[in-house]
Image 1 (tube, one colour):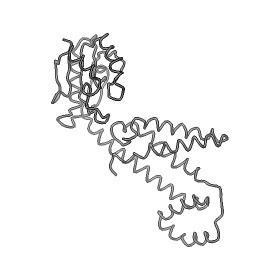
Image 2 (cartoon, one colour; image 1 turned 180 degrees about the horizontal axis):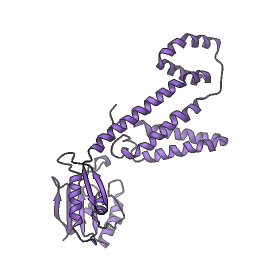
Image 3 (cartoon, helix red, strand yellow; image 1 turned 60 degrees about the vertical axis):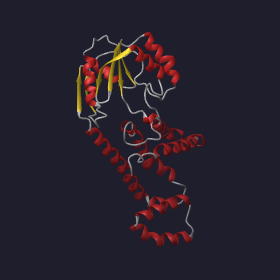
Length: 304
C-alpha cells in the first residue's frame, strides 16, 4: 500500500466511532463512567488528526501525530470492539446448527472463512459463535496493528537516517535533516544561517518568514513578535491588521526569509499570494546582505 494511503481511514473511522460513543453516552446513562475513557481517547485522536485529516500518513507531521491514533486503534480493536460485539445470546435454529456443524472443518483450516463466520454470528446475535472465532479476531488485529506500526517505523527510520547535520550552539544541540537535493540543502543551510546570526549583537531583533524561529533561538537572538510561523492558513486580514503594524511599531533589525514548499497549503509562497503587504514593506525597508544555498534557499536582509 502506498505510504500516502496507509492511514487515511483513521480520521473517518474515529469520527464515526465518536458519534457512536456519544449516542451510547446519552442512551445508556448507567454506563457513562465506563465509556468516558474511550470517549476521551477518541476526542484526543481526532484532535491530533485535525491537522492532517487528508494527509494522514507516516511523513511530515505524521511522525509525531500518528502514535496517539495508533494507540486508539489498538484499544478499539482489542477492547472496545469485543465488548460491542458481545450481543445477547440467541440460539441457532436446527438448520443453522446443521450448517455450523458442516462448516466446522472448513473453518478450522481456513481462517478467512472463520472470520466471515464470526461476522455472521454478530449479525445473528450468536455470542457462542463469536467466542469460538475470538482467536481469529485477535490474530487479525495483531496482524493489522503490526503491519501499520511496521510501516510507520520503516518510513520513520528512513527519515531519521537523513538527519546527518549536527548543530551545536550555546542553547543546545540539534540533529538536522541533511541535504535532500541541491535545491533543498536544509541542515547545512540552517547551520550556516545560525552561525551568521550568532555573530550579531545579542540585542538584535530578528524576524524569520515564513517559518524558522528556531534559527533565531539557537542563534541567541530575540524574536519578540509572538508567532512561530507565517503561513497561508490564516486570513489575510491577520497580516494587514496585526503583523504589519507590529513590525512597523517595533522593526526587526534583521529579516531571514527561508524558502519553503507551500504547496500543501495551496499557496505559491509568502509575499506572493498572501502577506503581500508585509513582504512589500520588508522589501522597501530592508536589503539582502547574505544568501545561503542555491537559488537563495535562505536570504538574510538588514535594515537600509
